[in-house]
Amino acid sequence: MRIFVYGAGVLGSLYAAKLQEAGNDVTIQARGKRLDEIKTRGIILEHTLKRAITVTQVKAVERLEPDEVYGLILVLMRRNQVTSTLPALSANKRSPSVLFMVNNSSGYEEWIQAVGRERLLTGFAGAGGSRKDGVVHYHIVSGRLQTTTIGEIDGQITPRVKMLANLFQQAGFPTTISSNMLAWQKYHVAWVSPIANALYMAGGDGRQLARRAEIVELMIDAVREGFKVLKMQGFPVTPSMIGLLETLPKPFLLFVLRQWMRTEHFDIVATRHAMAASDEMRYLSDEFQREAQTVSMQTPSLNRLRDCSAQQ
Image (cartoon, rainbow, N blue to C red; front, side, top):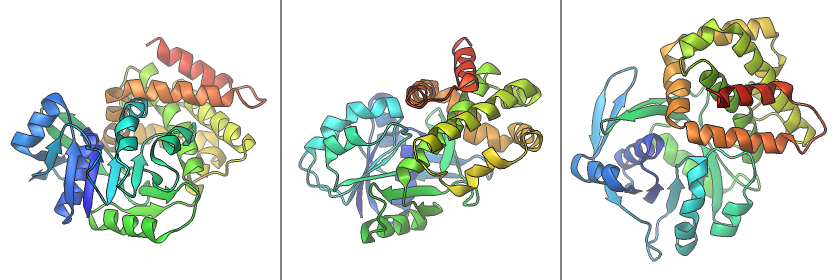
């Protein structure tokens, strides 16, 4: 398939390289120094655990041209950067599918207006990492924890979404189709945003956060408040597995999370992203706080965690 990847950060670079290696014809959008790096050196990936390094040559361009036709346009950018891409996506009307793999708790109306309801798909990446000196250090999350997740905005399991799920599977990404991506993304923000804010309170160090039981407990309370907000709005817990953050006894959950925060896995999938994308995480925190204000319940832990992290 001919694929255009919008965004050449960690995730955009990773998905572009893996999709190219799987036999697709991939073009990636990049700017400035990153555009020069990809043109001259290719996309360099290093697996954070295995330390295996690959170099993949991918066509890199500065912009999406209106008259180009791609089987898929894949948007992998920070939430607070997406609005700037919408005019170019809107102008390219001949590409049939535009998949936004972007954090989002506020809904899809802006994206629908830009690309049209019939072209829009949404999802989320099942990977994480960081980039240094042109090298993307990545980790593809276990399918038992978080798969690459995609879906139609109306929840239908269409031939198109099945084909795209197979496309990602062939590229090495465990993939799941969701029948309620909006609920999935809202709950995702409801638990990752408090984790990020807790990290900021602890100085951006997972091991230091693990030592601060009072911050981790505040984080758990904030997650649970967020889940209650979403339930009051009528959104079911999605995926069902994350309901454990709400139902497990707090002392046990506190112990498990503190153990996780001491690991390299937490550093890769949580700390590095939270620190590299602090602008996005604070944007999402503020976005979710506005959403919480639409229901008739108090959110003292969410408020305290956000306010304290903002002072760091």
